[in-house]
Amino acid sequence: MYIPSLDQFTPAHCDIHFNRMGYGAMQLAGPHVWGPPKDRAAAVAVLRAAIELGINHIDTSDFYGPHVTNEIIREALHPYRDKLTIVTKIGFLRGADQSWVPAASAQQLREAVHDNLRNLGLSVLDVVNLRAPGVAGPDGSSIAEALATLVRLKEEGLIRHIGLSNVDAQQVAEAQQITDIVCVQNQYNLAYRGDDALIGALAAQGIAYVPFFPLGGFTPLQSDVLTRAAAAMHATPMQVALAWLLQRSPNILVIPGTSSVAHLRENVAAGALQLDAATLAALNAM
Image (cartoon, rainbow, N blue to C red; front, side, top):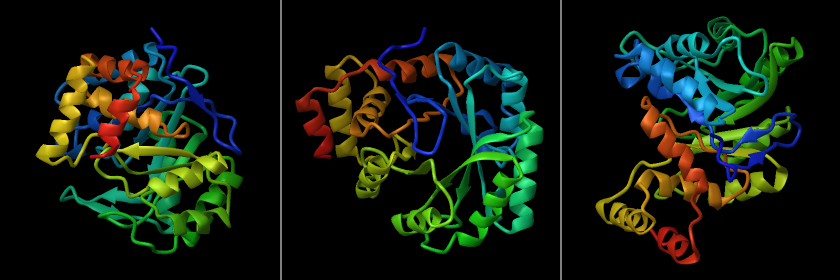
């Protein structure tokens, strides 16, 4: 049951055709993205339902769990269908205290790629995002050395395409002096719009922008605006927020995550929503 309004985006320097509605697998691990889920069978069912609904882009990382999410993806979907793209992230690892720890040495990045390959059951990774080291957001530090390691891994045939995560415009420009970048994954949503200018710049270059946490950070007033818009459209607030992202720019790919098949179906249905001018104006004014 693929919804026709879910159009595709093909980044420049890339042969992958992404359906713009994807799936983020972060929630498949246990609480706080640590350990196994309470119901592994349900996690498997969500992934299989995502594929049946026409999703061809799954976002993951081997530091989710750690290892748990990728192992579930392999259990649910391997051998993988043609044209299914699994995008992963490296550059962090999980401490024993469940902390998120930058891990961007050449050895750590190489080990992370091999961990993803092994746990996903792949011989090559379609897209690997280098997550820059800022814990609370982009920190402006140079990513050249870490990116050079990814380029070497690409030359070795272990990575097909390279993306970035948790970066600012300066870091994107630095990366583009080193290699082609096919996507950028940053925090962005109705209430958090710090990347407005970056989205436009990437769209002009044919680079995908993938927002995470698409429905977070609302104040009660902002949430009320969204709730009213959703009620008027007989939709959920999440559906409206996703529809806003899809209408925001044609290079935006959304990856909402869920551990529920019912919620997954709601998210995919958001691709069929068309926000009229008045609704867009109200949401843009938030």
